[in-house]
Figure 1 (cartoon, rainbow, N blue to C red):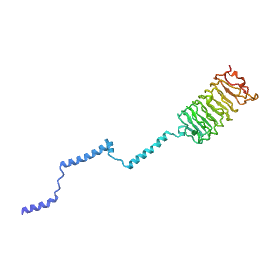
Figure 2: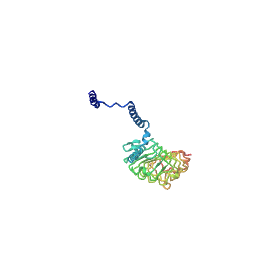
Figure 3: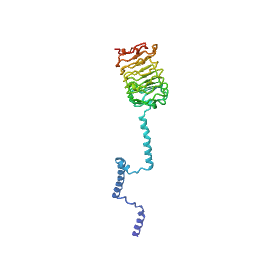
Figure 4: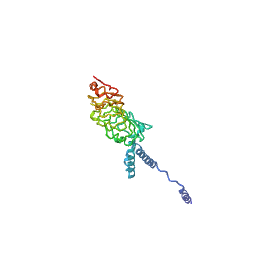
Length: 290
């Protein structure tokens, strides 16, 4: 009877018995696995990023994105290299001041520009394209550049241009000049007489001021217009003057009324040997007469 009771009690308590917790060895293995995974993630994400990236093979979409990004970055660089003119220079009421900014070419100008001052830069050449779309220019000043060459048609479309200054450059010859010039200044260059065509000044009926001093001229330019008031030719290599240089040998009554000043000092010529060359002038030229 007692045995039967014991058996019944055992059967009643068996469902209430909980399974034993995992052994210490199983727990340690589980924590070790978690630690290993965590360490690998940290190592790959932090200290060895390059190794992780090398394991990733980029797909077509990512390659296209990289290509697009590289192609869109190029215009930004170009825009920085080609700074807009009115940020590089000063634009004010039709005038553009680009002085001492080390430009090597004529910058793109606003179409309404009338005056350009590009003095003391590093410009070496002037072309027709520089002013092709700027028809309203009235004054250009390129003093103190490195200009060696000017295309012959550079100023051909500038019908309103009145003042052109090319002083202190490296010019050897002159281009075709626009018809409405009142002032032309090319002093301190290397211009020789063969670099000036016979008719360069002939049709410039408004030209009043001509500055060609400190060059390498061997003679006075031909066909100087009647409109001239001031002619500076000092410090050249002029060795001779004829009766037709300033006057008209066949017309003794001819008087050149507008001439106010002619400077010829610093040339290897004795003006006193050419008295008939100045009979039409109201004032004798400045220079050496003996």
